[in-house]
Amino acid sequence: MKYRKKPVVIEAIQWTTDNWLIINAFANTEAYTIERDILRGTLKVATTEGVMTAKKGDWIIKGVKGEFYPCRNDIFEATYEPV
Image (cartoon, rainbow, N blue to C red; front, side, top):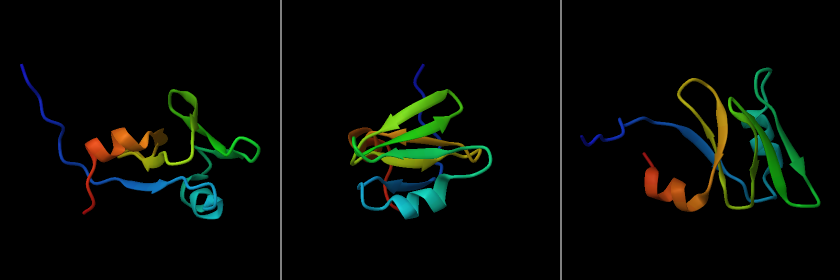
């Protein structure tokens, strides 16, 4: 059988390494945290599946249940389009 992903509108911000304040305001909540590693230029994102690393150019996505997770840019562009 074949399946198509349901159309879902999400919120996301691309990590550029100089937009930490915006990402911090967007994704740091009581339930989820994001920490930056200044030396590596990465983010550590606490997800429902454990801590994941976001590199420059990756997207931080807010899921439909309010959870946060990183997504590589190539996957993001293949999956999502602006609304």
